[in-house]
Length: 167
Image (cartoon, rainbow, N blue to C red; front, top):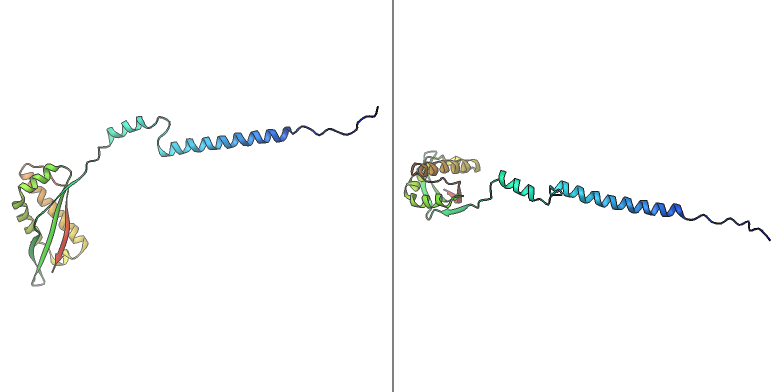
């Protein structure tokens, strides 16, 4: 019989190993990206319940602010280089405690009187600048809170200008 001298082709073992290794590497890369994303977002593997309980103990709960508007504008005169100028300001109060706004409404005549005095003692040139208006709002806040503290009431958080006219 004649011998068959034709060599048989080797089995494709190398390609099968390469395909398996590529699949394993891709699965590991996807798993690592998921784990990394969870770790960076802070959720971790605990589902976030332990951290949410820890957060609530250290951080205060959000309290929405409430507002009240003065019904009429504060109008007064200020001195500017020997001339009288008029200032008209519409004011609102912000507080986290609604009792503070109720107290401010109760003591509004005294508060309005003191706010007109603060506004009248301001400099005309100062009222025309943004920094001067911020300073005026801070002085008004101190004035209102002084009245409320004197009456034994809670304080307001901020004085806001709704409209500001200087002539």
